[in-house]
Image (tube, rainbow, N blue to C red; front, side, top):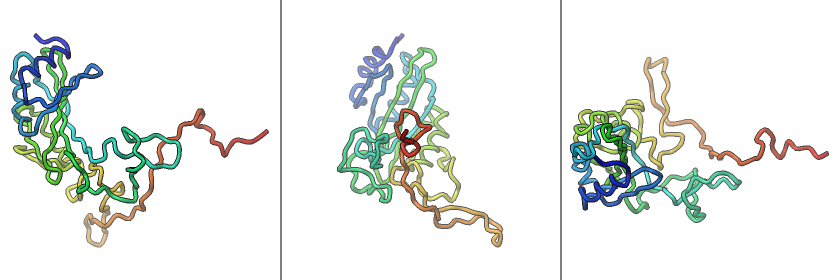
Length: 234
C-alpha cells in the first residue's frame, strides 16, 4: 500500500513512464501533467490500478493560459497586481481585446482532482489541449461518471470539447448565449443582453448597452475607513 505523496510520485513515474511529462510535488500536493493523447489511458490506469485506486473524481476544471504571467492590471495606482511577474511592456488595456492569433503555446488546459478513498491519496492531473482554435480532449465520463456536469461546465465557460461525452451542451449560461465567458479574451460586458419584449411576448436578444469601465483593484491602506481626502490638518 502506497503511503504519502513521495511514494505516490515514485510509483506513478515508474508505472506510467513516458506518459508523464511533468510531476510536481509541492505544498503537500502532487500534480502530474500528461499529453492529451495519453489522457484517457492514464485516467483508466489511475482508476483500475489497485495500488492507487483513484476511484473518485472530486473536481474537473479548465484554465485559459493566454495571458498567464505576462500581464498585470495597469491601474496607475498602488494596487494589487494580477500578473505572476511584472512585465510593463505587456500591460493589458481593458479597452482592447486579446488577439489569440498572437499567442504562442498551448492555451487551454483541463485539470482533474482525484481521490483514492481506500488509500487516502489525492492527485491532480493536468493535460493541455493541442488546438487553441478548437480545443478538445477525451471525455472521462466513462471512467468517472461524476465528470459529466463538470465537463459540460468546462465546455460552457471555456468552449473545450470533450470527445465521447454523452450530452455535451451548455449548463450555466442561457441557450442563446454567445461565446464562452471564462475565456480571457471574452469582453467583461459580454456580447449581447436579453429582455422580455411585451409586443413580441418573448425574450429577445440585443447588442449589449453597458458602457465599458476599468476595474480598479482594492487599495492597501492602514485604515480603510478613512482616505487622504478626509484628513484634516490640525
